Image (tube, rainbow, N blue to C red; front, side):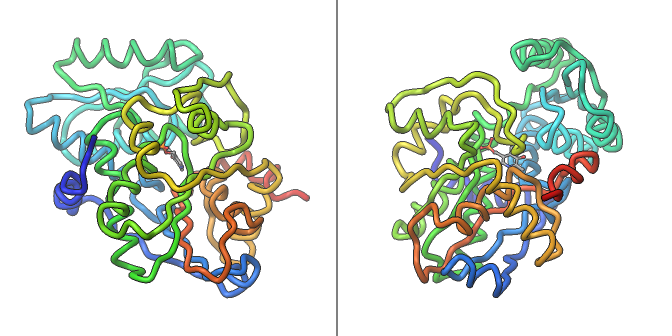
Length: 316
Ligand SMILES: *Cc1c(COP(=O)(O)O)cnc(C)c1O
């Protein structure tokens, strides 16, 4: 299991690449929630999501150990983050994407000089190919969440929150594979254990919720939640034990609640966040976590929204 010291080391390791993002607030949102709500603005992070934190920590370590290239299997935020940090460090990155990848996602990877290789339609197709490519190219495969360096990198979000808002009572974190949540849990619980940390999942992608209830890894079938960063089918082997050890609670939000939160933040706060991040705002807006008059931080994990999808998100 990672420890706070790993996260402190990660912060040093990634400091030249990663931004310290601000906490944003809105009186309207706070009064609507009945709590003082702050948004940890990782949509303003380099590459538009927190994924650059873990990717930078992992890829820098790999280069120190002699890696000459990197690969990843993600057309989303993780793929962009790996392409970006490889470009910064001057090594090639190959990102394996599905055959039916959206053009805009492919272009985002290519804009960071990432090479795109299309392979199959499922992650079961892409993952072995990315690992094989790494072997062929004297490189390293960078996993999206189930890796100690990735988890420690994501945990730097937690260190920043407890420094930026010393009186924080609770933190809401979106959950996909659990890399972000396990990192934040380790940082926060090993600094200030009284802070409540609560995971948020879409009802349609409740694999971690079910796994925690059943006390074992539960896998769910492919899902189509609009929170596309949270479509993972089961928690990680390394992330799950951290959740079991430290997590205070996990709550679920509906597609309609995610959409309402997305619209509120866009219209009232002028912030473009992605649906995966709107889950935490939705949890606060719709009173999922039974908190009153507390200081809450909702982690806004990213802001990469497909413009083609926007119309459907904002129509009532
Ligand atoms: C990857 C991602 C998540 C989920 O992170 P995990 O570490 O997989 O739990 C949440 N939001 C956004 C925007 C993401 O890109």
